Length: 509
Picture 1 (tube, one colour):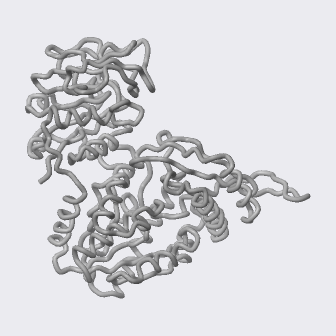
Picture 2 (tube, helix red, strand yellow):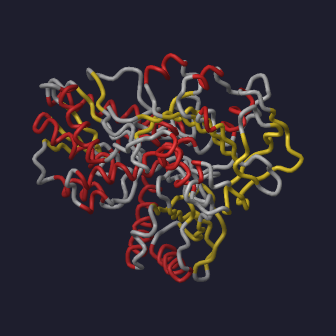
Picture 3 (cartoon, helix red, strand yellow):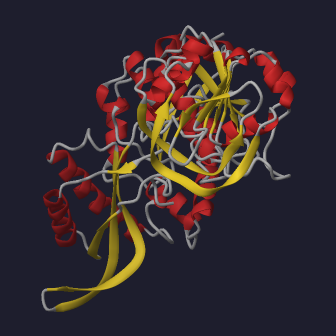
């Protein structure tokens, strides 16, 4: 029974980041569709509501909207970007198309008597992303921030506890953005802040106990951060009722299957390793389309688990390390499908278990790591490099073959080794190699080559919902490039990915 703040999703790209920032302020938060009924919202008894941004214009007939009754509930509401314009539009103001759009970093002036900006500087940089603007304020509202081109960069109706911000406080480019959200939560909504991983660990363990009872649980253990933390949580909740099955699908990083087995061999759990590389490669033969790869791997995972469950005997529950970004990126609610995750969008219709246990489903990646520390998990598991469930299948562009897997394993191992030797392995939050489908001409010795181009990817991020490319020193990149070209067959060109998320995703597929 945590305090709850609801984020109503109107289709913006930063919606999950808003939720993450709220949780950073120790307030529990969930994302709901704008189609959620007023009755449902009342029943949830939220301390506050946040309207997200979105790509539409509020005055168009088919744009996402909500009943104006929401403003009569007496619940504090903060509108962000599109959400700010929607609040103005539904409460009697006017929203118009601007002669000059605002995008990116923008100098902004604030009225610090507003509770939103309490204790903050009067000037700062905000991240704008809008074509429309509030041309006429609703009755009872006042402007509490402005820019050179936007007269209403923020507005408030203090007596009704309705607030709107035209910019995005949730992104790192906005000065003091998290502090603004904190002011809304604590100064306006009067939250106490009862959300922590310590509390969540206790709650999750009790919930798993209640759900599982005396049943047997089968865990899909990949050895990655999410499944390792889940194993620790489940072991505390159900002990020897847990069987961990590690499916080596032949698409792991170099030597990783053996490393995972070694890491868990001394745990007080039932550990089973299944070597299924040939099985997965057979299913993937001739498949190039990324979504099909993910769906095939997702279904085959379940089939393997079902086969192993039959050997074990009756198994009641399948446990999965699904986390919140997996759910969102797989198209939950009204969000667009960015990519299907094998443990969300890739599940087949028929699963041979009573139910699925997903205690991490509402957590972001950094919260999962915090939970792992809270549960006493070893540091080398908590801080392990993120690795997608489909493995190297989505880091090989085009059709998967055994030869391509071996090429990428060798190249990726060199990249990761050199990053560690350079002391950058904790500064770069995720880094890996991608074998592209592009071949180009090269020369080695006196011979012409026509081999693969390898892409290197390194990012820095706090939440994996947005990310910047890592500024790896040129001398480190030069050494990596030289080693890969000289030591790995069939690669004659190395490129480094310098795009952010968005517009790109972290993974290539």
